[in-house]
Length: 267
Image 1: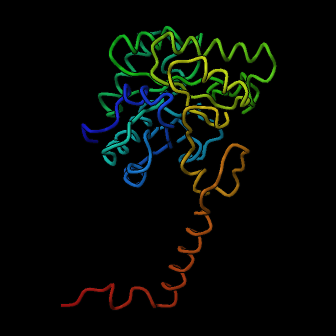
Image 2: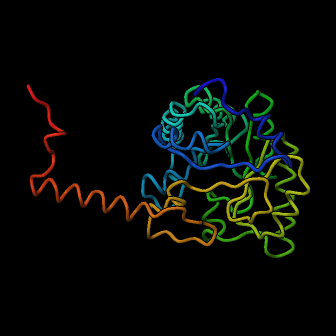
């Protein structure tokens, strides 16, 4: 990761000027591929589901996020790098939140950190920001609250629920975050929050009303044919293409046609 990467202040300044493009990323190879095309690369705790095969993000550890963040950092030279604070790494107390955010920066080489929650995590956000670490917020459908929500459900449909999400978004901004992810909220609510805040909103399942968008790279590339979600657009069908390529490789090995002479060394 070079010193020319987009900074948190630059991302914040894009509000109302340019839509922010963000994708999740978990290794150096993908990082190199996305670097030219996105503004933000997010090492999300979604790695637990798409990399590790877990049902939720809850078991993901800080050490695992640090490992993947270091890998992604090696592949970036332009995009801003943000990393997730996993479950129970910031909820216990603000000092522990700061310590763990610091590890993502010093060990993982993240440029900013992301944590879920609004009103209930505002003090942790403020403590991290006061120490000089930029924070991206995350409200609405917060995957680490999977059990509390009773699953991955859209948040903010009822008036009281919408007011709660708005209060969370305002608390995140007041705590000093430079941007905020809105996940799984109705488009009308996303539009109101985006208009209300002075920091950019980055949507996932929150309509085009947001200042930017984020998708899980494995989802947008169609690498998991079993995963179907209304908010995901599949820009390719890599699951089928990868399967076909591996099938062809296997057939050539079994037939003895690979490696050919052009793939072999000679004395």
